[in-house]
Length: 197
Image (cartoon, rainbow, N blue to C red):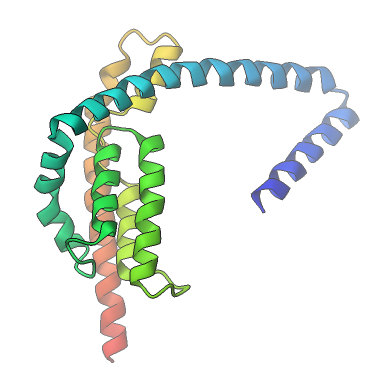
């Protein structure tokens, strides 16, 4: 569906440019956009490779395992439907740690695997389970210590202090994470009260 939307937007844009006689500006914008995309991608690749390498070192040193153990009691309370030794719990913890270090690209496949495991636990029903909804809320608003992607973009565009974003990002993501959990719990308990009536 998204492909059809993008094709439609592209065709409408080109037709509109032809009618208004602005094809030159559209061509210039297309090539400038392509050049910017390559520049940003190279900047992102270098930072992501660095942080993914650090994550691998941390994994080999046992740091990720210790972080997982640190978060496990908290995560168990957030996901009471999931058994502690279930693969979904491992994927959830790995996803949260990757997001904590701002590695959204690394967190995405882990999040997909977590959702697949939670769907199996839910009996492959088409409706999302309580755990799936909670995970989506937390994953969307995840607490981030080091926003690597934003730092990479700021470095690419020549920011004098690209890491200035760390403090505000940490504060904003803590607030959004707490807000997501509170809203998730509020709607869950409200639904439970309605079902009891």
